[in-house]
Image 1 (tube, rainbow, N blue to C red):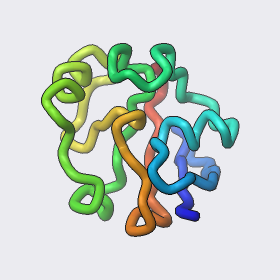
Image 2 (cartoon, rainbow, N blue to C red; image 1 turned 180 degrees about the horizontal axis):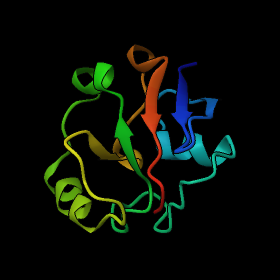
Image 3 (tube, rainbow, N blue to C red; image 1 turned 135 degrees about the vertical axis):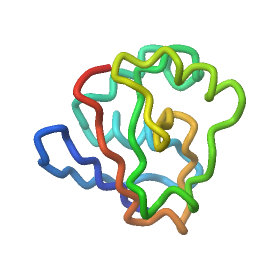
Length: 106
C-alpha cells in the first residue's frame, strides 16, 4: 500500500497509508490529516484540498487536467507551479513515499 508524507506548514510530517486507486485527498481524510478540508468531497469543484507537490515528485505525479487547472485559480493560498488538488492525485505503487506540502490555509 503506498504511503504519503504530508508536511504541515510548521514542518511537522504525517505519514498515511493510501489505497491504490484512491485519491491523496481521501488518504488525508482517512488518516486524519488536518489542513485538507475537501468541502466538495473530491469533485474538483472547491479547491479546499490544495497541496504543493514536493519537487522530486512532480514528474511522477504529472500535470493537472484542464478542470483542475481552472480550480487552482481559486485557492486561498497563492498558487505555485507545483500546486495540485489532492483529490485529483490518484495513488499507485509508483507514488509510494509521495511528499505533499500543505498550505497555511484552505
